[in-house]
Every structure is written in structure tokens, then in C-alpha cells.
Length: 357
Image (cartoon, rainbow, N blue to C red; front, top):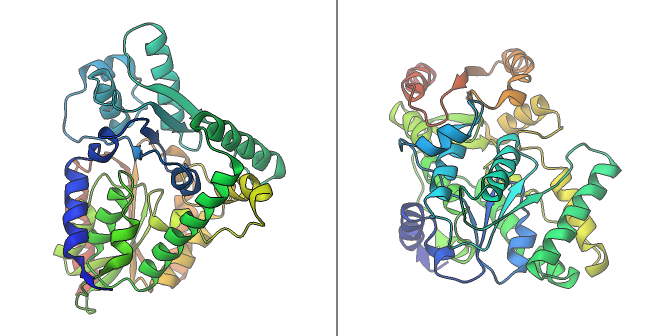
């Protein structure tokens, strides 16, 4: 590795400052909402893929008039930007069925476009099934096939995409297993990877290490809007040693082993169906949480859940009990504001100071 992290850091900073820069400068760019769209499809295509960015603290008067109260603020931000024409640089936007807010936002946008109230790119639904059964895998395979056809991709292209995505998966796994930098850096990397492909720069970079005496904290629950919770942990003498939420880099799973072009769609469908990180995943969240505590050697867990992630809240009681029985301290923050504006960072700092003392 001949590069330091400097080049990569500059790219991460630039990407987060202007998330649409890469997609906006190319034709046929594709946006997406939700974290279930497989890397294999994105890397099978020559198109640029970019998750729709969100803005915190902005006024959303039109979105507020269109959306019901159950929509999180990030969805309101996206719809307001959509109405402003911010996403007109995209040809399609793919909304995942694996996220309640994302799929509902899809239907609202389609209706608003039908009524002529907004314009923008064509909205598509990625109609995946997440129940662990063969019918759900078949449904997901069908959704993948439809999306490939819309994007002009073949099964051969997808097989090539799998190979490229496996390289990224292995890279992310190596990065997590040797995690030795400040936690906020990993959060910024994961967020920047939503808006641009940083694989080559990441593979070439040598990351700086930090002191190993910081208290290790696992951050779980909802995906935070930025790195404020990570920095709150660091300011209190700790470090986030891993993330267990829908945007975590490990959500992409292990490398896919498929037998070639004929099995490519089925292989990707099974990977999507088995994803345990999303808000509608059917896996054992308590076992996964304990597994991540062991993997990261976390001393404590901060679980941060926004008001709108109702499905995940049902698992909290069991998770709290399991952590207590395992002797792992936990701060459980439920019904939080999506943008962290309710002072969650202060509560996190107080908790971490007690752990680090």
C-alpha cells in the first residue's frame, strides 16, 4: 500500500460535502433509497449509483403537507429536494421494500408525479422478500431480474458484478477485523460509500491507528444521520469499535459463492434475503447483537433507535436482558429524533464517561 489515508480522507470529505457530484456528472445515473440494493447490481453496471442524500435542519414545508407524521425526517428532506428538482440528474430512483419508510415514500412520489405536483426521475420499487423461506427468495430473484432488465443488464453482467462486489465485501471484512482508527472515520466512510464507489482508494490506503486504551463501544439500533454519536463517544474517552445498523459496511455480507452465470440471480437473491441488518430483517437480532459484542470485544453498547423504527423496538426488551445477563453495560435510547437534535449525544457522553472511568 503506497498511499496514506490522506487521499482517501480528502475523497470522503468531498463526497460527503457534495453527495450527488459523481452521479450528477454522468448520464443514466441511478439513485436509490434503502440499504438493500445489492452491490452486485451496482457494480455490474457502468452507471453511477448514488443513495439519495438527506439534509438535517432544513425546512420541509411541501413535504410536511404531503407526508403523514410517521415519516422520518430524512424522508421529508428527500421529498423536499425531489420537489426542488435536486434529483433531476438521475434517470431512475430505486426504493427498497425492505424499509417501511422507503417503500411508503415510493408510493407517495408516484402519486404526486401522477397528479403533476412534482416531476423528477422515474421511481421504481425493489420488491424484495425478507422472510427466510423459498417463496421470498423467489420473489427477490424476480425483483432482481426486473431491475436488471430495466438497467439493460444480463445475468452475465451480474456474474461479473458479483466478482467485483466480492472484492469489496472482502475489503470491508478486512477493514472491520483490523479496525484501529477513530470510530467516526468508519462512519464517514460507510456514509460516503453510499454516494460514490471508493473501493480502489480504500484498497490503496494505509489507515492511521489510534490509542488502544479507549473504552470500546458498539453502536446499534437505527442508522445515525452523521458521525455525531461517534464523536460524542470519542469526546468522552471511548471509541465506537463497530456498528450494528442498516448502514453498517458488514451489511453486504460475506463473499457470494455462485457457480456462474446460471446461478447469479439466485445467489444474489439469497444474499439479500439473508441480510440481518435491515429494519425489516427476520433474523435473531439478539443473537446478532451478542455476536457483534464478542467480535468487536465491546465493553458496552449504545442502542439508539429513532421514533419511526417501530419494528426494531420490539426486540429491545430481550436485547436488554441478554446484555445484562452477559455483563455488558448498555445505554438504551428509544424514540429518538432522527437527526439527533434531542440531545442524545450528551446522554451518550455521560454514559461513556462512566464506562471509561
